Image 1 (cartoon, rainbow, N blue to C red):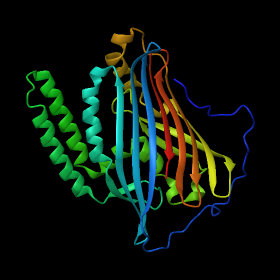
Image 2: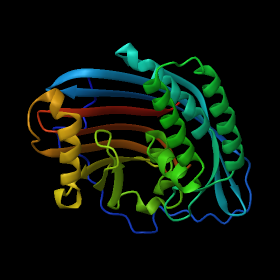
Image 3: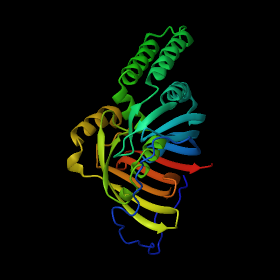
Length: 312
């Protein structure tokens, strides 16, 4: 799997730390017309067991985004315009189709942005989301009404139960939306306070290998190149093992992976690297390249390559 080179062999152009106000933009406008942005995202996810790829998925998405100011608040409308998924082995495609269809409900939202963090703090069309969920739930029950296997029916009911519990709690839904890379990258501090671009922060990552495990990532940011209207950032995340519930991870590994891999639990590790270009005049992302890898060393690994580009 190819990926871009994150760090040059040459010494990067280092920029002295800016004052806290140099990049600040104070929003004192009551109302603005919507600004339409279009982004395309390509994501590749591969899972490896004993260093052999066991499944591989490629997702291509196009998002249309409208930003506007209303009563001093940043309002963002997001439309998932295109959603293309390819998965191998193909027997996983049915489950992927269900989750993909569910994303059409979760990702088509109008939100209010938190003035301090740039994250989503309220879904303004939440009633519409709930209505769309009820319609979706009825459709999938009808679509799979032919099921005769009790195990298949139980799995479908579990899918509906878990999705409904999440969607009907706005806070949980917002947390889930932020686990999707486009939303996590787009809704960030640069939207509300450009002076925080290079400051360190902690990102709570939801493990893709171990259910219910949160991984605190301590992310350092460095400005490596600047132009009058853009700044290029390098970000790198590190974990502290003492902050992670290794016993819970080991328990899940013993149940889920050791019967397949054979080898005992080794060491848990996580890599997180980002290159990002931000337009400081318009306070928007121009492009992002992200690489992350979560692994129990030599035994099981999930690798994600993600590329985001503004096309308009």
